[in-house]
Image (cartoon, rainbow, N blue to C red; front, side, top):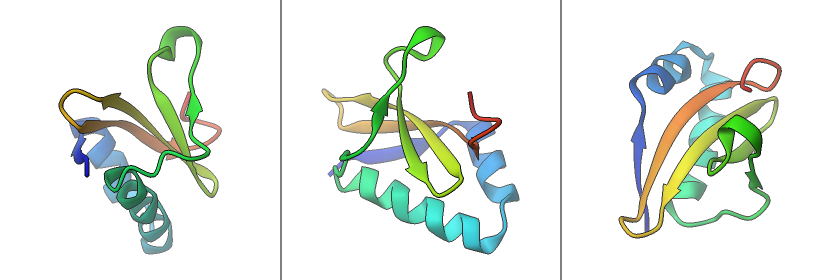
Length: 83
């Protein structure tokens, strides 16, 4: 079981979405909390070391700290704006 923490800006982005998008993204974040990382993509370039989880047309960018069992949600946005 991982602890999930939102970056302040990511939390603001998340709260702006409609209820349907929030529910979809929340389910994906619960997957992260339970340790389900299947299908997640390791990012490259300036985002090296971060991971991306797909949630429909949205992406959850996160950083996984294995030693502390912590997942920091860095960005939640539409796929054309997230990177």
